[in-house]
Image 1 (cartoon, rainbow, N blue to C red):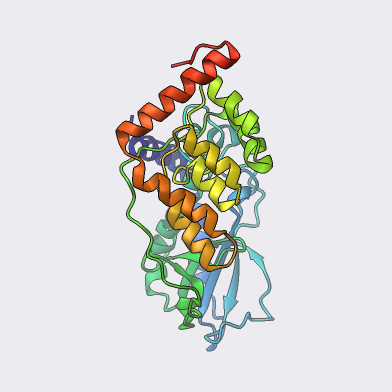
Image 2: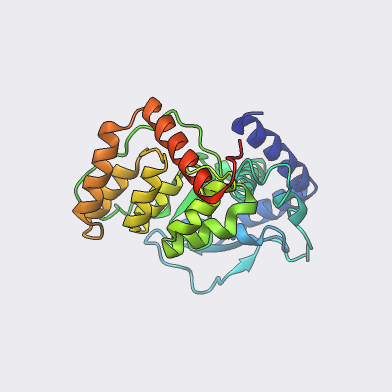
Length: 303
């Protein structure tokens, strides 16, 4: 299956687990909408934690006025006072059938927010006159329940974001590389390699069949790009020598250089590989390196 097919299938499973709560949540939202909070009530803020989906129902709510001030007389309130022991099961969130293919916790929380928006709509929220949104705890972004759009929550109050003082470097278009997350059996060693800049451990991983172009933590940031973000210049050099694709690593380096946190040496290193690197040269470099490594340590390369 493709990643999108895994995601669609997983979203359906999450929805199925939330279905028994739909009517109770809709009724609770309906009661909330019908409550008179006074003329200065402007926004209903719903907050949940993506890391508490396995606990009791994780949503609490607040009331704000149009100046983005929290109503002091209405403190944090749980949406459901009932003790619901499990919203989405831990077994589903860590399902081996999906966890190596998609970011299950992220997909589950996105699905949870969209399901919550369905409940809001069913409860009559679109006609309530309130600005309403749900956001992850401590995040500046949320889902507008009335428009179903993700947005900076400050913008819902008419607050303009502060201008970015850094040079405007446009985000490059995604390349055609299909990136997959590092298989879980490599997780601990990959983390240690990146933390320590450990090139010997990199060679050990490659000998064990690990791909230098796997994404270690996110499905859109490769190991090389992560090493650039962490300023591991010697590890970056080693990854490039062993066939890592430049991807958007140069963009990341230039952006961080504008912030004064990445050296020009790293940028020049990446530019050299970006200029010379082609699909054919990647295969040649990677294959020749593996042959040398295999001969050195006496292992055959695992396909």
